[in-house]
Amino acid sequence: MQTQQLKSRIEAVLFVTAKALTVDEIAVYLDCEAEEIEEAILELIMDYASRDGALEIDDENGYILQVKEDYSDIVEKICPIDLKPAVLRTLLVIALKEPIRQTELVKLRSAAYEHVAELVEKGLVAKHKDKNGRSINIKTTAKFAEYFKLKGDTRALAQQLEKELEEKLNA
Image (cartoon, rainbow, N blue to C red):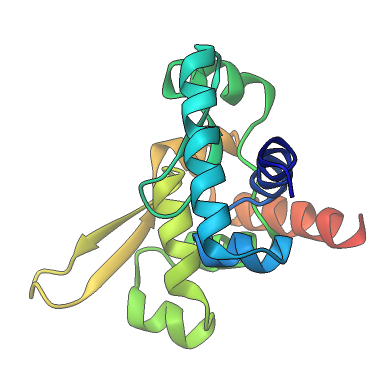
């Protein structure tokens, strides 16, 4: 396969995935050797860097195509935070039971660790150590209240989140 064609295929994979991918994962998607992918992706990273555009390929925890930090304010205005239904359900549990211990949350939502990591990254929840220093409590943040246009009423929040979740599931 030609290098430019491979770079375009890698670009397509990175564009449609919402998480960082390893070279091996990309190789599986494209049915190519990892060495070919690694060489092409390095060229692709250099291509993006030389364009001086708004997009970049970040390689900190795998490879992901993203908007450069300088343009995040624009993205936030146009595309507010999008949460998958499973993550939204976890957020609903946190909002209803906050502050909730992480161990309790995991009992209620088995994938909670991944969901909490995503919610912390998006600034919607925060983790704090308990007084004893061993347990982790999770609470919603001011950004959460701002995003859902809330003014302190958790019950109203629960209804709003359930409605949004139903809409996503029925879409």
